[in-house]
Length: 311
Image 1 (cartoon, rainbow, N blue to C red):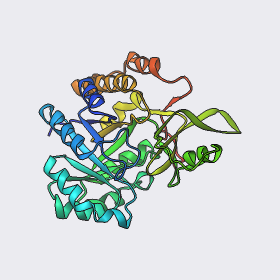
Image 2 (cartoon, rainbow, N blue to C red; image 1 turned 120 degrees about the vertical axis):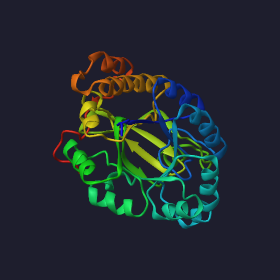
Image 3 (cartoon, rainbow, N blue to C red; image 1 turned 90 degrees about the horizontal axis):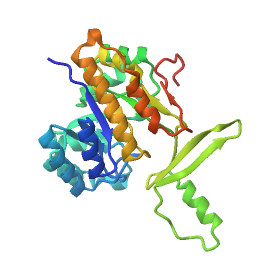
Image 4 (cartoon, one colour; image 1 turned 90 degrees about the vertical axis):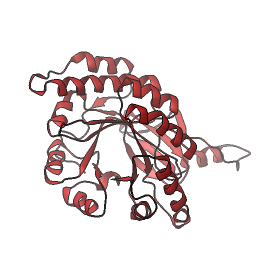
């Protein structure tokens, strides 16, 4: 079987999805903030349906994120929502809660199941646990290094997904901390705002004044994001050599123009490697294109890929 890695992206709208498809993305994760966490945009069922209709003719896969914390109030909504996703024809559900897995098996058993529990997906034994319960893909924690990624891929039959570019979440509170602060500062107070992305709003540590941590807030609370961006473009061949199944570009809080440049760069690297793995050579111009659009206040780094301490 020919190895064909997936280039998975986020999208804030149908317009961005079409743009990134043309740039080389062949899978997307979308959804509603009610069910999924830290989404680049809000996709109602109607928009999910439109996304599937846009993607299918181009053999692009659509995954719906349902990896939010599921409380009792949401359980009654899962059957209708999941049944609708099955009727629409999405390819898989991204989940973290067993309640979602059980509902998918009952109401839309043809859907794929991708387990994503953020930083707790750290070993192959856990991957096999979820495989036995019906999951087909294991979304690896961003804190794993190359040795751990390879070890998991070698010892598990599950598909594995690795984030190769973009920011990561480092803190989450269910409270709307920024909205609460703003309401406190306003004399009138009381009226809730529906702020989602805080352009230019960030926090800094006193000991590290040069590092800025962007703030993202939605119906699920407040999320503080990393001060830099993962960029594994130079090391992509190492992930391709061990047949990582899905390579994710996280486009949250990035412009469509930025994400388009990034997707094109990774698509060029992937295609060059697949054409001739033995003769593959990294081209500095691929990374230069990203550097040209990268925020000067955000460092590009390998993340934890070459670190021994990962937690």
